[in-house]
Every structure is written in structure tokens, then in C-alpha cells.
Length: 457
Image (cartoon, rainbow, N blue to C red; front, side):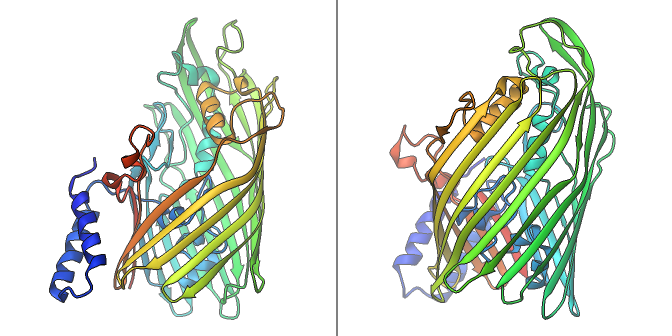
């Protein structure tokens, strides 16, 4: 999937940085060459710039303190800053888990995203395709039938399909204050091959902000989120037929920030509740074989965040960013043996973004939990796939006793190529296993493992 010419691109970058007296025609040729490399099949994309600057969220909605077009998914009032603007995140369908179009967006398999914003007088409006929520996908994996997910020791899990073909519509207006609204919805319809009879969701985002970015407030309401899927699962005890259902109740995301002179205060909360139903009749067996249970089970997810952050402009070419926040995460699925994960983390993030030339920009960040503890129990009540997800997201089971979170220090590097109104953001790939070969810690064969293209017209 990755191509050897990326090594040539690195040599050209070093050449440009070392020489200050190159000829203009040679520079233009170099730009064209690099641009051709960037559009090779090795390019994937999502929220590339903010990831390189230390963003670490389940949904990567955007940033409360770094100005970026991605922030329209936190507060739609930000569309007022991006009139006559197109953004394209080249990708695919995401990472598919199981056989029922159950997908999430990852570094290895990001989802394709894209849209436009147009200015008409004092109003900005537009549309965006493909911004399905990773949280919604994760909750549907969590809510899938345990026996359907098991399906032969998990070799071909039949999970609930996730949100597909989402459409977002935006509108923004106002002068003294900027206001914005965003309606999103999806309904891919029935899928007889996968046994899905219903799969739909919709919601509303509202926001207001000061044009000078001194303060902002946002509210997102998830109004519907339901999927119904019939399954036949093969187990050591024979075939099991049933219906698995996820029915999301009201979900809320409320947040805001205020810029004091030395820093910005940020506060937000997300809360979701749902009911998951499994009509399959489980054969008698030790509970650890499957997890789950027949009938309806309620679940809840809550995220609370309070932090401080700021952007410091050293000069027109160099920006420094920092963020310190406290985050509480609570997840609970009320099986007979309640499965739960609780964590408290205090991450610290430093990032820098600088222009090397008028068309080449570099950025990097370091993220670390300076404090983190978790209390997790009864993952065995979840389906086998959700057990692995819970371990990756919240740490291993510790019987509900407090224990430290795993090591968390992470570095991200990225760059941008700027050609007038065209900007290409790239995220530098890292080695999958640098302990085997220290020279691959920064993996230049994955030079732009993620990329995002924006155009101001």
C-alpha cells in the first residue's frame, strides 16, 4: 500500500531546507513532484492537523482552543470562519469488525469524510458527508448480542451494524455574535444480506460564539439512534437464532470555553444512555463462554472534562499550544453481573506549529497522563469483541479496585504543504514495533499515513 517514492520526497525536503539560493523554476517543479506523491494510493485522511497537535478523543470532534475547520462538529457557529471553503479527507469505509458492516475510523483504516461551506451574503451554509461517530459505533459493538459476537470463538462476529452514509447540513449567521446550527441524519435502510431491518439516527447541534473567539457555547442533542438486526450464530452447542437491538435514548454534549488573559477555561460533558436487547435463547453453559444475557439490558456512558489551555504566538511563523485537563469517564452495562469501567485521568499536552518556508509547515506534540487511575470490573459480562475494546479503551479488569492507567506518553508529528488556497495536512506514521528496530521509530515509508486537503476559494 505504501510506495518507495516517499523516500525520495524526504530527500527533496532536506534539499530544500539546506539550500536557500535555489532557482524559482526548480522550486515549482519540486512542489509539483511532492503534490503528485501526496495523491498516491498510500494517502489516507481524517482529522489530521489536530491529531498532530495532540487531540486524543473517541470522536475527534475538534478543539476548544485551537482554531481549525474541524471545530464545526463541536460548535456549528464556527462555520462563519470558513465561508467558501471545501475540505476533503481521503479514506475508505473504516476498519470493519465482523461481517455486518460494523466499522470504526482508525489510523490504519480511516473513513472518508468531506464537504463544503458556502457564503451567501451574511449567511454561511453547507453540507458534509461521512462524519459517523466512533462513540456511536463503539456503543453498538458494546450492545451486540454476546452469542452472535461469539459465533465460533469470535472468528466471524456478527455485531450490530454501525451508522452509515451520514449527512450533516450546516448554517451560520450573525455579526455581533456568531450563531450556528447543524442537523445530521442517516438511514441506509434494510439490508437483507446482513439481516438488518432498521438502522437510523438523527440529531441537532447548536452553538454561539464571540467573533473574536473569546467565548463560545455548544449543545448537541442525539434524538434517535436505533438498529435492529436478525442473526444466526453457530456455537459449540448448535445454531442459535435471535434478534439483536440497540435503542439509544437521549444523548447530550454540552460544552463551552472562555478566554481569560493568560489562558482559556474549557468545560464540557457528554452523556449517552441506551437499551440493548437480545432475543436469542442461550444454551446452558458456564457464563464465561459467552457473556451477555437474553432480554433487555440498560447501559450508560458519561464523560466529564474540565481543563485549561492556550495558544501562544511567538511570531507570525511559530505557534505554541498547551493543554491541561481533568477527565472522568464512566461506562456501565447493567447485566446481572454489572460490567463497568471508570477512569480519572489528568493529561498534559504540549504542541508546536511552525513554518519552515512559505509553503511548508511542520507541527508536533507530546501527550502524557500525569495522573491516571481506573476501576474496572466484570468485562466477562460483555461480548467477546466488546471485552477487547473495553481493555484497549479503559485498561484491564482490576475487580473494581483502583489501579494506575497504562503508560501513556505519545508523540505525534505532522506537516502541511500550502499552495495558495490549497492546503494538505499530513500525519507522520510511526513504526508498529520500534523495539525491533530503533531506526524505524519514525517510519518514513508511512510519511503521510493520514492527510486532509482543504481549499479556500
